[in-house]
Image (cartoon, rainbow, N blue to C red; front, top):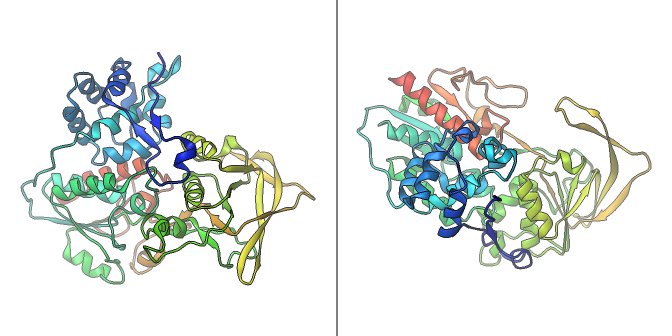
Length: 447
């Protein structure tokens, strides 16, 4: 039996709006998909946070949708988020035994369906008398805070921006993660007793030494906000953005609603996005919705090496994004200080490099030029050094990530770290997994 398809906005319509692309399951569709599950439990091994997937699917079969959500929330405090943005196809669904000869169960779509029946908020646990500071309100920070609050700790989350959510708030567009859905999940974390303080940059507005003296333990989950650039001539031209800035302007500063909000992006007719991860897909699809006529993804390898989820690549293709593969930018050309063209060379694939992927090699004499009034660089990021450089004795690796041991402990006593600031995994669910681990290890340390 094949997977029950998830309804979507028509590509012709959705490329002009920021409404959610995936429309989710109806009750009948969810029941039909749940009934395909044989409840073998193989999928649990693929879930980084250990959700009891067969049990929540069984509740859906019984039409106990609130019960299904409660089971998920025993391990996952952000089910509506994970049901939308987690790469289930490489995790829980990849372990599904049905997938060996047929379509695997649509675990993510069922999780999203169950999450909308979350009618009960958390309650305050008995206070154990100890306090923990969490730096960063992204998926790792929110998860750690929620789990510690359940154990009775007084938890305060510090967020440098004016809204909580971290990368969920500023990095993922509304057409993938609607903001009311995200804020409902954050409200649940608050209902457990977690306090979230925004506009607070640890290391500047709050000295880290004071923070350590004010709390019994600290969990650093401040993400990776320092973008990588190509290092080619012309990157300082106007109209050239890092993906971080571009998506932050759209998602958090509402550039999509200029002039109602004073944060415009000068899109122009032709947009080039360099990179092929999920962030690149998000930037390209945002540019299309902001009015660009032609949006191209430039990637130096082939489609087989693209790190983005298959679903995101397919959605981008449906919406008309042009994929220029085996293409590498070498120079940006401008006029009057603004980018106008991007010079590229064609690539071929050689032997595998240290990442295991085929090394891209430039082809001699293959240079060509594309029009580009906006260029977005989406080739990855490193931790922002604003906090790290101000913390004496905090050890980091060559990439600037905080060094942690198997317990997520740093070189400083009672200071832990997780998520993108300490790991290269760079997925929401892997960050949440580290948030769970951090809460467990902090509890062991303090108790």
